[in-house]
Image 1 (cartoon, rainbow, N blue to C red):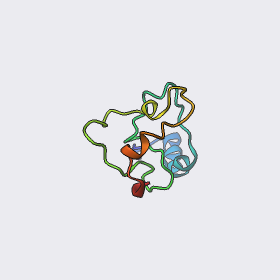
Image 2: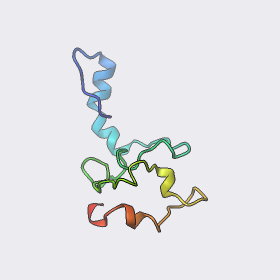
Image 3: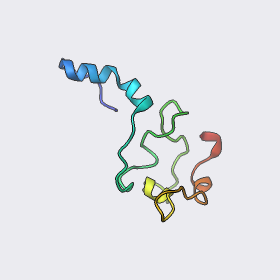
Image 4: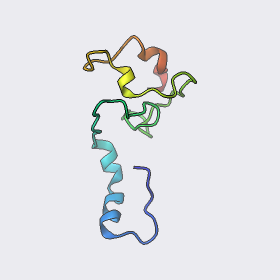
Length: 91
């Protein structure tokens, strides 16, 4: 999603690149085990222009992934930790 159009792109890449705004609005991530998705750099918040959290990470939270935000059941959010990680005004 960060790639540019490049020099002399082929038809397939030009078509894919030109539709990236639509893809960003509706694409879904395949989560897997949730440990590979960085909460600070992955696009996931639709209400923000960059789709990324605007709360800066603190030194002890830089390596957090989505897995760290879930309860042990891996089905529900760990709502006890979320307010300490993200500033609500930045949502």
